[in-house]
Length: 241
Image (cartoon, rainbow, N blue to C red):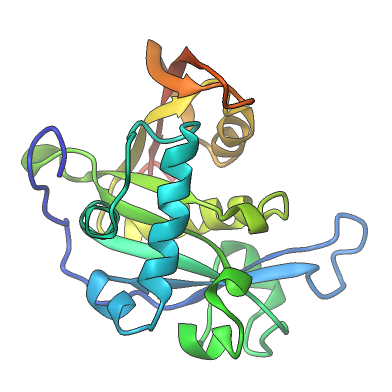
């Protein structure tokens, strides 16, 4: 649900192909990647068929809201509320790879090589906590005549942070969003103190379309108080490339 009410997806697509995204050594790119993720397209129905996944994703998101540093929501995030908000349209889940798939082409890996991998096989015997690198939703930012512009929300579990997975997930977003029928992307609230996120989007060709003063009442890093923080409105067109 948005300020405009319920917003429908642009295209009714059941599932886009799984892709692999890898990070190579900056010293020797001829080696195997030092880490990679497979990114899987899910809806609420397909995620519900994977025991424990929705509950894990919901718990991680609830903690993110409780921390009060990145998303504008506050208060207790119930599982049902999470599912209605996060799975309103399309969700993509990144799974930490165990061995580089032979079907993935190194030359194309940076642009999302398609592979035949299902999420349960990639998970193997690991827990979701061990293997979920991060996840994000894609949904229209506006209704009707402006529904061709999408929005996304990203979550990287604390246990997987500072490993480069955020960068890989962001690259996959730029790959998938146009394939869902969107012509552009806008992030309404990228808080200015989230410097790493701002740099990441700029690296991917996003631009700052405006700055909103005092856009968020966020918790301070020590968690002991709150402060008002400005936010960037960040935009990227998919049809100019």
